[in-house]
Length: 139
Length: 193
Image (cartoon, rainbow over all chains, first blue to last red; front, side, top):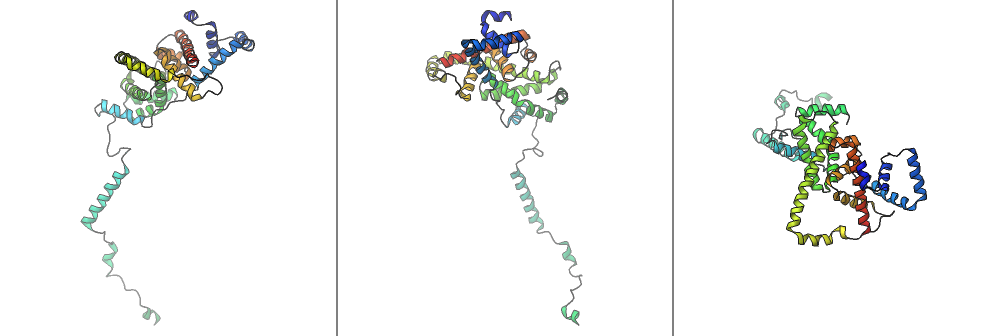
């Protein structure tokens, strides 16, 4: 700390030591007393405290939402696809529109080749007993 | 993230487990981005450097010996990248300044720095003080900027900061004090204009 004393004022050193909790009990009491009795000292302290409070309350800056994907993309490019290669079949980001179009093509092709699916019960229609007529049931 | 979780994550990263890498980025992206942004003061540059940090981690994970906390190692990579980018930008800006000295003077006259600002008081808008503080940070040397961000924005201990910037704790403390005073003087000068 010796190098500090040469180019920092005693007051600046004191303010820094106070906010770092470096002062012992007696020094803290002296500090509090000086705040009450010395308006210049108090004003300088309030200014310093306001600036320090401003730094400590700087809001957190967040990475963009697609940051993970961008990093993956950069590694994929740098490794020539050795890492984080895109898997088309199981890609998390497969657009649902693509899935829908593929399904429609499959259904249309099936219909063109095979027509409407036959009802399996239709083959047995001839062997089914005719329903009882009203006349015979009344007689 | 606890030390045990970090150790497990590092083990998986060494096996080039891609899911582990994504987890690492998800956990640390905002801390890394925030530190870099506060050092550089530019979102686009910070995004680029933050991506480079994670690429470096991916490449050099085998070099993490576990002597320090994993987060400390990540901070060291992040601050080294940010400081290197600052040096690069400073060299480029110096070159541009020499090439366009006349146009620079006209820009300076219209910059927000030259405009008068009301004295700080209780009504001072937080946003305005935030902007002036960020400009003040950018006026500091790269090591002062780095140390004040790690201590007063990220609230790291002197020991962690000493490991990150690879300086003795006493030197970290003295540079922090100087950085705070330089920042205070910058802000006071702005409000005295």
